Image 1 (cartoon, rainbow, N blue to C red):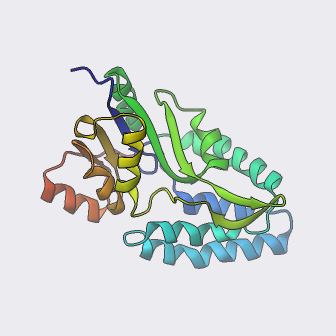
Image 2 (tube, helix red, strand yellow):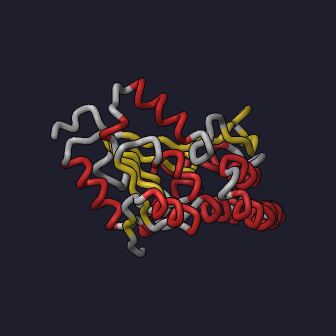
Image 3 (cartoon, rainbow, N blue to C red):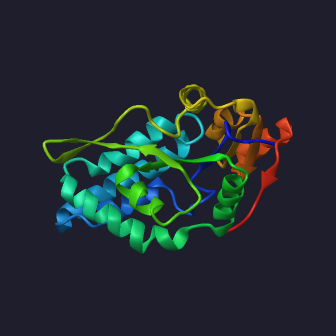
Length: 225
């Protein structure tokens, strides 16, 4: 089959990468310049963690917004340096080989490979340089004003409930036939993404996605980091 007008969409977290946004926020917060600042920012991450877990299945966009409040007031230069360090020193060793193999397989089939990440561009763009077999990275972006992070994410929020709407818009812009596209998800909110394509697949699914995948008779792939 000719896959020229098709794509494969991969949720990075849980499929290609064995770390999520909480760990990234904790690293950035824990490496603030001053001790008092580090304690304050880590405290914000600690407070956000249970809320992020609670909202993760119902309002993932809001969950991501809350986690990144810990960045507020950090200079853009500092965030950039720490983000690149985190991508190089931590995330590079957390790449899941099985996920990379799925990407390679899709690329070999002639599909456009698109990575979708909950993480922010400051971290995910340096990380993506260590990956092959993909055409595009779509991730979240921190808002900066006058050289400082506001603690806000710029809309639209990747990983939220608008995944299906975003995908249909993306398909229209790139002339993709969604009926022949593939998507790989790992979290409950990815159901909207998966249900929008003709070839959905749950990878290392959480409880909510596993149950839905079984009900919908979607393929399930499991592997470990």
